[in-house]
Amino acid sequence: MTTLIESRAWRFAALAILYSAQGLPFGLFTVAIPSWMASTNYSATQIGSFIAITSLPWSLKLFVAPLMDRFTYLPMGFRRPWIIGAQFLLLVSFATLGVIPNELFWLTALGCACNTCAATQDVAVDGMAIDILPESDRARANGFMFGGQFLGISIGASGGGYALQYFGLGGLAWLCATFMFLVLLIPLCLGERPGEKRFPWSQGVASIRSGGSDNTWHLIRTTLKILLLPASLILLFVQVSARLSEGIIMAMLPVYTVQQLGLANTTFNDFSAVGGLASAVIGVLISPWFDRLGSHNAYWYAWGFFLLALIAMPLTINQWTMATIVVNWVSSHLLMICLIATMMRFCDPRVAATQFAIYMAMSNLNFAGGAWIYASLANQYTTAQIIWLAAAVASSSLPFWYWLNRRYIRLR
Image 1 (cartoon, rainbow, N blue to C red):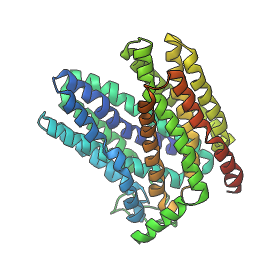
Image 2 (cartoon, one colour):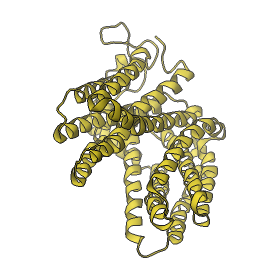
Image 3 (cartoon, rainbow, N blue to C red):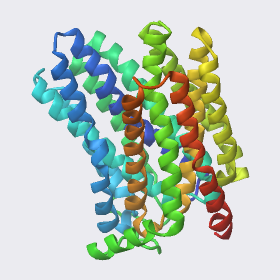
Image 4 (cartoon, rainbow, N blue to C red):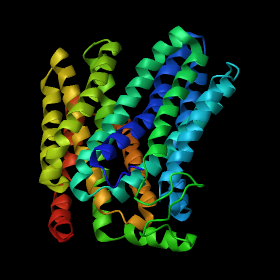
């Protein structure tokens, strides 16, 4: 059985495909199905509640991570059993969506189930990536992983809308179930490490590695101890500044383009989609250079690109403004590739799923915090002033990144 440890090509391809399976339900239940609901006379309150409930699992995946570090079946791999289980339940959830009554309660329940399975698979894949990726491949792997995720979101949002139009909810659900079955073949056919079992009844043994903790309190203490290390705290602060800045800009863009520039909202949506796909492609192409340079060094270039994109935004109008939106998507994505690759570097394999989930939970929280900051300041300051504020927030991390690079990263 081919394993992810043995083959670099299979490693990149498998991570990208697994991430596309996470992105598809996110795009489906936050874009395609809500827009279809709007066209079938659901109220705004019903649609808003649907989106809130079905997206909630992505905020709760932090609670799944400790279970993965605590409970393992090492003969089949440290993370692989969790990936197989979550992917199988994702398939079952979509198949069930294909036979339920077309009612809001069932749509919401199955949407929540699908995203719960996708979020669980996300945590498991992140933990496995941290565990099996050599440091020299992490930036490139992040390019493939998030490229796959952006592709899955695009398929769910755009392809899901067309499927609903031509095949209905049942047809869409079975198409998604088929896709999830094909993705399930990846962890079934690829092992995590040589000598491990493919299935529980197969022959094989656990590889020699640090497995999960057999004591819950020890797991919690270990995780807290690692998170409170000076290097980890600095890394968290850098993440706070980067994601707050990104949240401010992403909340500002629809208002800026539609209300202030008078452009159609569909124009903004189209350019945002182009920005997402461009980010995926450019991230995959440029991440090998990040690996050669070192993600901690590449961060300086990505940050400079991000700052230039911010500065260019208030200096452009109309179609050039939309072009800078695409550039902003790309620069934000490259910045996150470098930052996440560095986070992986500081994750301890014993609690990697939990530690990385905390990092990513903080990332999502800070992004939302940036949007809240914009909402609080939008009526008091001009767009240009808010953009400069976002640039200042992003720049506040640079002394800390320099210290992290000089004091901790070079010693590892």
